[in-house]
Image (cartoon, rainbow, N blue to C red; front, side, top):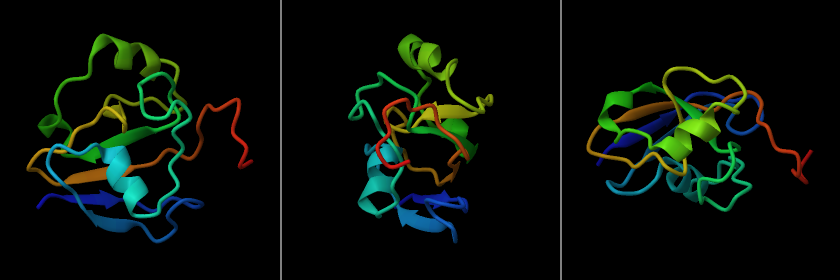
Length: 112
């Protein structure tokens, strides 16, 4: 079973976490199932950038992003070459190390 290692995030996961991933599941769903409150304003349909993450290890094991995801990522805060929308990143057999960016672009967030 692949592991999803979430690096420490000051607000969402201060100590970091090691999660059991399931092949074929999205990174976002795995994070949410483990009570880490990663934003997902569009309800996981690849229509915003609030679930943006940076894949620090294991990026090459993910399927390539499509044009829609790439267009949205261009609008994400803190974009890096290994950025993905976690609602679109499907877990394979390889472990992933995931960093949640410090900020997100969400104009309708009710939690702030």
